[in-house]
Amino acid sequence: MLVRIGSAWRGNLSENKLGAIALELNQEQRMTQKRLYNLDDQLQAEHKQAKADVERVKEAKADATY
Image (cartoon, rainbow, N blue to C red; front, side, top):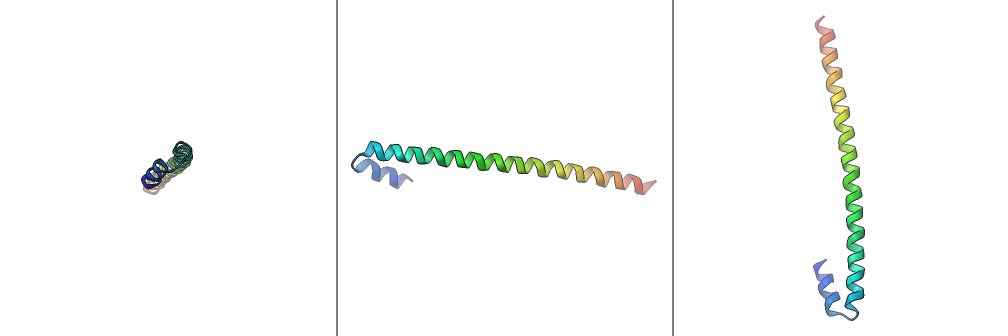
């Protein structure tokens, strides 16, 4: 990325090129943020499932002791 910025700076119409790079960076940031939100949602769902599994094991263990 830094190479492209340096090349744009030295090239013609550097402001336009740098603007395009900035737009690309913004898009990349939005995509990364979306992936992070999706991973967070997935992690929360897995955590909820794990808690439910632990509760089921506790209940089964309690039932087995009676």
